[in-house]
Length: 263
Image 1: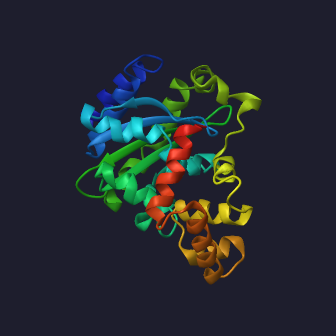
Image 2 (image 1 turned 90 degrees about the vertical axis):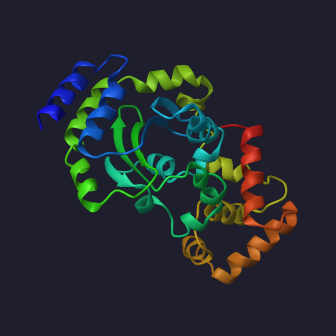
């Protein structure tokens, strides 16, 4: 307990300074061990801003650089921020759709991280900004007890992060000026609406969106008010129009489109 209090005191002294996020990570690791920490700042559909990470160089490319190139648009954490989730601590599996771990985002991107589990503190910052402090494990998921222990730190994490990143909206606007204010039109919905323009119908683009986000045919049907059989027909038509044969190819085409026309 004394060690944790000392670490917390050091973290508080670093609010507004360069080592705050590293000290925050140290405080959390003193309570529950985990392998990696990454802190992203999210505002609308702007590319996530890497505020801190402790990845080794060989892993940083997958976890940060590749993620920022487009896969973030299918990330349950990003989508939770877009939908203005209530602040708190969440497991990624509790935010993911029903077929997330069988979906193409998971198989083509997330599985490459090699993580056993990721959980995140979602902290709301003024002007439509979220800070997400992600805690990652490579070997085994967090137990219910460990999750509860971290949840008990929520008031400290929230207060410290809100104080340290109070002006994050301005920082994101300065980093990605084309994505700020009234010009922030490239939302996740618009990315899907523009996908396959001239080839796919609006309904087919909706099927693409929910399929790539990890929803099953039954779930897509319930969301759109159609049968799962009709969803399957739409998928066949989508594959034919795009000249592809699988969800894996669909994912690749979508990401390639994002790289050529980034949000």
